[in-house]
Length: 450
Image (tube, rainbow, N blue to C red; front, side, top):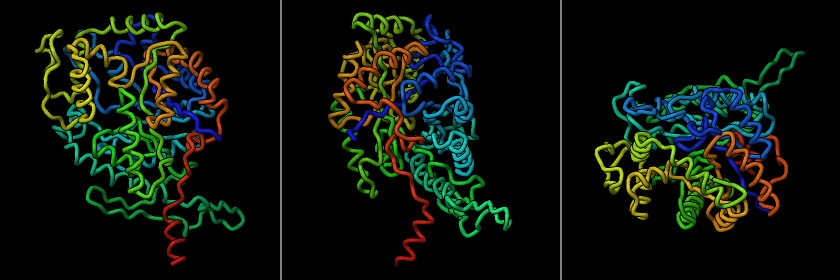
């Protein structure tokens, strides 16, 4: 079977573009309307997407000084809650929900994601984030965010703890024998008894082992600690790259790091974010792009750049049509800050030009053109060690998702690059990922063989 492109659908509210909600075609209420998300999930499933991906933060994305607010990005649903509901109105598409290793306890996270995986019959994924920003920290008894390196140190132990909890019950632990009265076999229940630097968790988890063994683990860090965490623990990486060369460097680096942890390159799928502006003609596609950028309020553009740059400087003190300033180091989004500065310097962008450039996709790759032109670019990356698939970031919802499904998916299928039906029943099966064996069963086998 030939290698196929994997696709995630990144579907926030009215769309990925910062000004999407202002567009006539957008659903301005989308961020907190179930019917809107139901339609998006069913459209993405019609397009045979692997998963519906939803980002999340632990603070309201709002600055009271903004004249137009931060649009529909200011507030929305908690992802696991939303996906639990959407699982009942879909059959095949996976659901990747964001949750934090910095502000959630391992037991609670393990419990809710195992529950989601049961509710959706093996279609759940966890987007592992360490959460940046002092605004979130202030909602969890802290004044400032934890240092970047310490967040990742904690995250590595966190993943180990969660996996121990997910393996609390062996797959065949529940006997449910009405004749003997034995509901489960106590020899097949395992306490984690985890005691580490950051966590002390007894276990066992009070949820059975989930259909996938573990929900699929997704990660998006691009810094040095982020790359290493991805190589050690992630099964999908959501990354932001602007050029084929940069994407190839990231792809080859992560795949090479897998060997250090005894993993095979196919154990992890790398899926860069792509925001496509597609139309039947290139001129129409360019007009769509410009129309959205013209809707960006300057206050919102500055807030976007500040957030992506780590909130280390007040950009409103600078001339919008002057150069983007040098920035002090951040403990927040280190890799994204570096990307902002690199884009500005490489293109000699003013502050206004930079926020227009990044507003559509937050530093992710933007492609503008016809279905053939879009697929040409996706195929180039896919066939040249830059991507295993892509996270599609539609600029406006629902119209941009409809355009992608109606125009781009058929072209991908025509070239034999994309599925014509779902291969499996679980998210793991559709992504081509193996189901992990219970670690306690593995240890028992090794002890017996020794």
